[in-house]
Length: 263
Image (cartoon, rainbow, N blue to C red; front, side):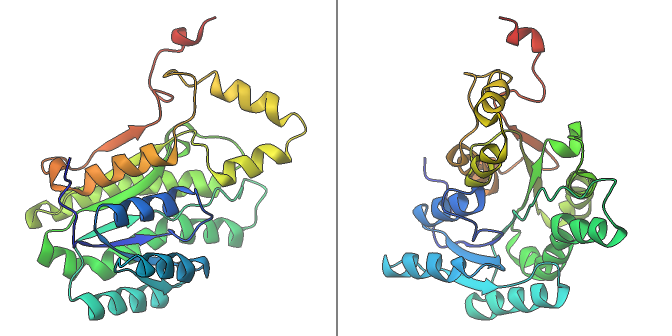
């Protein structure tokens, strides 16, 4: 299916993660569809990713940015707009489950909110004039933690819950400009970060198997490729009448009857 993303300038935050991370996977899928990815991230890996794409003849841009700094976000968006003259879509993908729980300091809690939610607000606000001109969609990457809780991660849970609230709020605000706003909800996805976490546990393999058994569809984790495919479809014109939605790409983890899991 041609998603019609060829030549579209798509801003994506947090896409300079480790190879195989959700952001990096979305970046590669955008490039494969012929889109022009404009990456906003603080990690220098972004330079390498964009260079690799450019060597393949794919236009792309990396703006090294600390997304907890609003001025840096504004400068990055301005740089993108200056180069391309437009922004056709925005994917807010930044997210770090930083474990800022009830034992965290006020500063740690606020820093979690700045990274995981406030950066979304500032990026959208900065890109909005260009999105209004293009009627470009906004996609927020969310987490089941914002709905179910997890324990020990107050900052991340509050931020991701806030992201869902902002998704609906912006969908209302921007409907008069024909700008669609949606969120993808991720539950258990096998990423390099997840692998690293499992390896820190004394009973890591046992814990992994107990999690996998709780995922109703095929008792397996969602792949980053599956998430990327869902993201690209959602920002494409193939999803042209979808807005204000929380789209769960989770194998039924959040919603389906736990009776399915009875052995």
